[in-house]
Length: 590
Image (cartoon, rainbow, N blue to C red):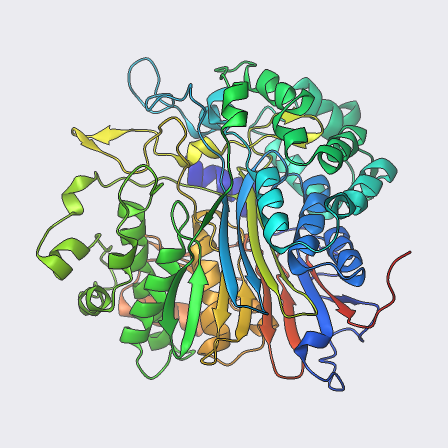
């Protein structure tokens, strides 16, 4: 049912968008690699899912702000103009890199389950799982938001401009109004057919004035959001987690259906956690992503498997894409079985990316028509089986998500993926922003035949996520690539595609992003028919793969690749993103 709803909501061809994939560049000619630049540190570059957000990031870079500063400013704008995807009421994961000393931080701003959460809270009175939309719209689905705490943690470590300055672009835009984009309008039309977004009084008034979805080009103001940001700007993260904003979140969560209790103690106890990135080798590069509860280990493992399946490099052939698919099948199976919140359950991250385990795993390449089962790294590496600790159960995640990538003039970088889970999250709004439904990313059934599920609900626990922002470093440990995507559990596949497009296929950033999306989280293999060559689809079918040709793959890749003389940027044409550049000597904004 969930897959059907997502295809109805996101699978149709999107309306034409303005400026998709184009450079916004006042200081360097659009799409110009700036050959006269003395080096890639001579400019700052940002790519994000909406032109307003790109402009906000550019404004901060122009003032001498760091990559983290620009990412916070841009994301605060995304929460206003792209509320279906992320915002202050959700959470996310950020990889932040400081060039001068090589510091790399993986900042976990994932939402947490409140103390009132129960393992069976998504089951009905008969013990059956609630339908997906019933879970989405339940107060029980709302986790304690992590975005503002993530902002504060990142700024404390990597920011250069004053905290309050970062929110000026979003405050001004919320006060003055933004023009509703085609994508926002289109999603409002679709989602109103099967959710309560147009029925809840607050969201109905904001998104459906006069009973109709906001029209394209409508100037929409959001004074409540501006006031929220003013409080955060003045009081820091405490302004969000204490006082009227926290109270409004609690009150909205306590509304029907299935009201939830999020207490002040839940807000007081929330922390953004700085973790160690998961890194692994690939073709002479070092690829780093997010540790649990996110799925960076799956990206690293898939690359390791692909390197073993194609030791001479993946090619743009049926055989090359066959290896890509099989690496995904194996990697997804392991991820779905083992990955959860490592603060609550033991996640064998080091084992899952261990070269010895990957050697054995690659040798067990499944037939094309056969799904992959999870492996057992404990048995392979130590003759100590671990697969039976957890029941085999999958759960979907993160369809209402965004990603942005930034490199500043000093070579510092950010890959930031953020989400509210479903499109427009839990269909509820507090203090001018959408609340998440991230707790539906937990497994609805906490145990199977008496065996616990690793990703079961527990108070204070963070649900598993597919968000996998990535930074890549070359053989000299210099920054080479920044990438990531939204797109539910397909995020891993989208991100993997961008990496092999650049590293294996030798494409520029835009060429890699434009490649057809191919996803193999189990069977059938999903292939984006608008972009895939018919010969590729036919060839894969001839090998025995069951294929689902589907339209409107909802990736939102935003990718940067560093070259000696310029930074190559790309924005996914499947959304409304752009690339923006600011020359180092650009005049500061007044």
